[in-house]
Structure formats: C-alpha cells, structure tokens
Image (cartoon, rainbow, N blue to C red; front, side, top):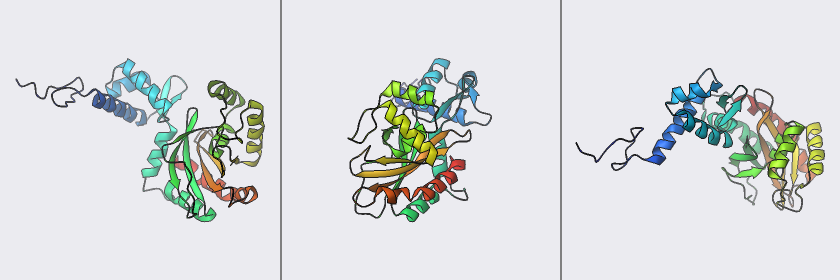
Length: 263
C-alpha cells in the first residue's frame, strides 16, 4: 500500500502528511458552523458532537473565536453567534431591503466624509468597513485594524452602553494608555465623558486617537439592547470644526438605527 497520500486524523493530506494547520482550520470552521446552527445558543457538549471535535479542542477553539468576536459566550455555559460573524453575514447579504453597504454609502453621501463601521470584540473594536470620502486626505485606519475602546468615537459610544462595573473591569485590565495628548487617560475623565455620551447619544474623538483627526461615533445595538459595534464619521480638524462635525449626529444616529436589525 502506498504511503504517499496517507490520511491524517481528519482525513487531510498534504504531500503524504496530515496538515496540522489545515486540520486546525477545518476544526474551527466546523465549530463555527455548529455555533451558527439553528436553536442556539448551544452547549459545549452539543458543539463537540456536532463538529466532531474533541471537547478540549472545542473549548480551546471557542476561546479564540470569542476573543476575536466571532462567537459570544452566553449564560448557562452556552455559545452563540458573535457580533463579528453577524457583521460579516450582513456585509455579504444581498437580499436585505436596505443593505449595510447602502446605509454606509448614504451616510457618506449625507456628510461628505469618511465613514467607518467597526464591531466590538472584547477589549477592542475591529474596523470591518471603511468608505473613503472624496476629500484630499486619508486617515491611517484600515479594515481589520483593532483599536482601543477609550480612544475612538466608536469605542467610547460602545463603552457608554456598558455598565459602570464592566467599564471599570476593562480599565483595570487594559489601563488607559495615551495615543495622543488628547487621549483620556484617567478613569475619572473617561467616566465623565461617558456620562456626556449617554446624554447626547453620540461620542466625539477630538484628536484623541490620531493627531489632526476628529470623529463622531454612535453605537449599534444588538437584539438584547447591548452595543455590538458602531459607526463613525471621520474628518480632519483643519477642514471641519467640532461644531460642524456634531451637526452630522442626526444622520449618524439614523444610520446606526438602520444597521441595528442587520447586525
């Protein structure tokens, strides 16, 4: 019997040897499919059986998927679809009456500025869509980039939707490192800012994440009313004043309200 194409534990062969990377990827995808199956959130034992992956491996892979925002840990040791997976589903869905892409394009048209869509993933946000403006400037942000919550308009709008205890736990875990001279680096300053965000329904990043960049952001709420991500309108300080960017708030909040049922 030839050994040139011997099967590995998962039946994956690469030049006569099982591919560990391919096997790990296949396990992760099977677990993700099991999490997304109807009837969720699902128990660990059910996911293990459905994905045909050992319990220890399933638990380890789930931990990584939770950290990346693709899976969400629910009450009762169950696992459900995370905001990042919901966001990807919405981005590729062509059957929605008002797609994610259309909503973001309308916001860019209404403001004439760069628009970002980001999802909440643990202690950070991850940009999953960026629509550049026609203005003669570009920001350093890019799709896939992960940013701290306390330095961005989207991040602060998400923090405003969490409980005080959750915000304090996050501060204790990550600290409040400064990215610019304008970054809020004390718990007192951040908590006071979040009170303002809750009162007016949007957050402002006034050169707190990147010099010369000013943004306005609002959170997108999930089915349970908790923030799953957010949208921002991004400008440069030498072209758009703070008063001018805050005037975009109604259009921004209309966009986040429209996106909420899609994510």
